[in-house]
Image 1 (cartoon, rainbow, N blue to C red):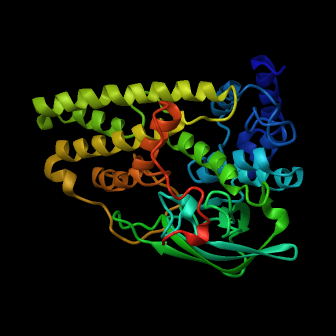
Image 2: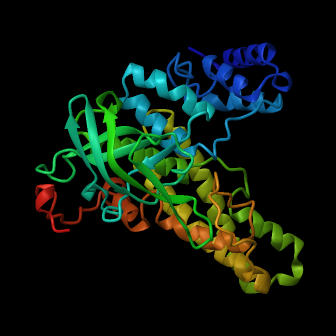
Image 3: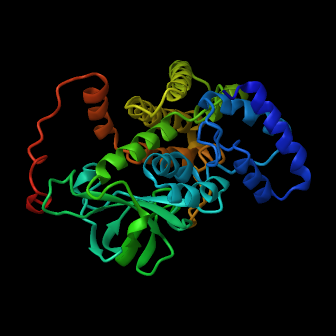
Length: 393
């Protein structure tokens, strides 16, 4: 069993063989992966050592103290938080060996081709079609709200392979090469002025069958692994006290006493406590992950994340008064990441509006929490056993 002492020893060996100050960043990250120190709970040979997930902090602390580079996790969050655990669970040995290393080092960015114009909250109603043609699948359709599609080399994709089956049963999960012919990415300009999201058009895109994850028709089950990990990665991120959106508001409160009022003080106290409770709950959720796959509790954390971000950013705009109405730059940009704390209050206020939509709408997540966590009766669903082709659209 690999313990904390053994991980420290291995980390020191890595640092001695590849001093961060004298080693190319990418070379260091590759060496870290090969040493099993990328994500220690993954199997040996795939960036890990089969160690408890909780021991990752031991490695991270030692590397941070030595000034070692990280893999810029915010830029490659979809790959790390969604694609990697799905490939690990359902991928073949060849797929794991091919995709996990460049995914973790950031050499290959990933995106998620799930939502469609007519299948967002009701994702299982998706209409993108994949038709078998020899050893390939030919895919036609449209995806939307695709973060990082303009940067991505690979995409996790779900498509309908059997329109005669009920909507949840006729879906298959693929890995799509975003550089292939027939893949067109168009920017979607948001209320912030940026276009971090995209719409993706797929026209006759050929995906080899060896880029399929899971069995044909079992894509919905595979997608659940992606979705549960997505919500954990959004709502369960590790933050220090006053990390995230509450930090800038608390800083402004301390530094600008002339802005304070009794009402704003009461609201700030309430939100500060809620943010701290959410942070500690996220820590408990990460500890639960040590025992296995994420559960539906991640949906509750993502719900809290969206609500808190919107309430906190609204309070910040009010606290700043006229200053809060200013906005730094409306120029159309296609950013590599979302930076909530590096921009001004106006950006945080506008961008947080999307938090209750992306990664599962709050309305859908409320249903999931009610049914899967609290055990309340499920809402009646009349379309579960109806062939997809017969559904009203």
